[in-house]
Length: 140
Image 1 (cartoon, rainbow, N blue to C red):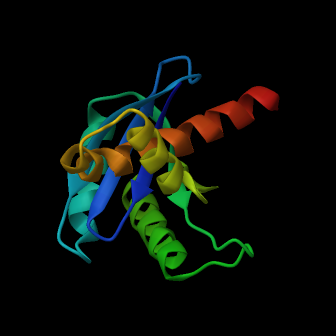
Image 2: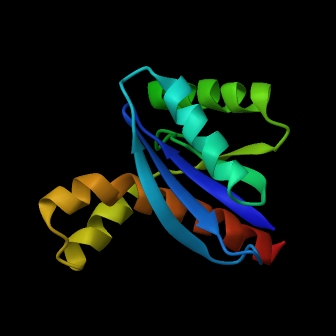
């Protein structure tokens, strides 16, 4: 069972996939789009689904440290609704607090160049989001 992991930003969408067993997350790509052009992001997800046997989508859900939902969280809710309106695959909102910071820290520790950091931070964050989800299923 392959699972698709997504990290939605204002102008980017980080994409990660699980292995066929649904145990390990892999970074795939970062899709860029014009701010507010979620249709382009949706098309990228559709393309990824067509090329893989995806059974579940895990979408990062940014929450504030007090567990409240801010503007970015509502942005993810809108994107989730868009995906669900055109696909029959379940979309799970997954708490993504601090994943971008974790991704940035990993890239700093591995001495990733600044230009590469900007290009890859969202797909690495998507990988962290997806791995967190996959790990939670192991415990169930």
